[in-house]
Image (cartoon, rainbow, N blue to C red; front, top):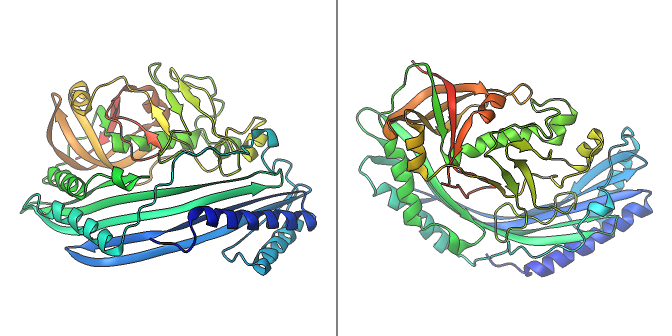
Length: 447
């Protein structure tokens, strides 16, 4: 992945354009403006059964701007950074603002919340990988899966991706910040079958650094092990039992929690956690810390998408809710201050009180281990939870047999309070670093 300009030159060029846009917006009567641009380039390769299925080169990005005129807001975007195109975009945004309603809560983030000097979080680790190398990596990953077990009978392919890019943000408070980043990933999806059943599963690895990825052999063999373990799954009777969400699935529970404490849902009164600040939402052993400035981490950023400085904070302390997740707009709607969460969360770390995966199974005893969830049956307004699931039935702390075609149900507020253990088998793949979670009882709908 060679580029005509190095990343710093590209950033400097975009910064110049951003400054021009801000000056132009001011000259056309905007009393505030903000401009953001992200650009990404890279390579994605997909192989299936040893043949190249797809090779895709990406080089795209767009500049988006928002202007504010006496409480009115207008937005426009352009992928063309020529003087003429930028002028047209600014004129369009200013014209749009003339026709929108006045909203006292709109506007730039307060200047005292902004970050004017972004630290280097070491998110940029480019790797000059040729198309041939990328194909070899994807093929090796898939081959490792196909040769791991004779019951692996088909494949949806191996995929290798490597991207680099940058983000630039500026506004009329005089802020102009940027950072480059990279992301490399490797995945494999395979199908296993025997005379009685057919199953599909996958494995993957992702990191800022190419050299930190799991090897193609590891990812392929893990995909094979996952899918073979699911063969000859059974239904189980309808019952109430303890349920353990494996670490890579447990982050979905935190995703529902994030939605419930996000400002947009709160000011619209569309959350089951309205007025929950200071309340004990989880058991008192549980603490969630947010650490946005971890070097090389996948969800690190020193500023949010409004330019607000991110900061280390507790989301949950000993079970109690310390903060909502607010943008400038939602904070004003609620009469609060922004928390720097425009654009999402940053490296949540969930405290553990349980052991490794096998120790967590022992603690579960007899119940259900969930390794896959299906459907969208979650209502953030009232907390109702009902999703299709698959996994394994656990007897006396040991895996007894795979389970499929069931539904698990409850309500999130009760589920959160009934968490009895969080493991130290931390899944590091995303923005939420959590171990497996045991909930002491849920309703299982089976046969």
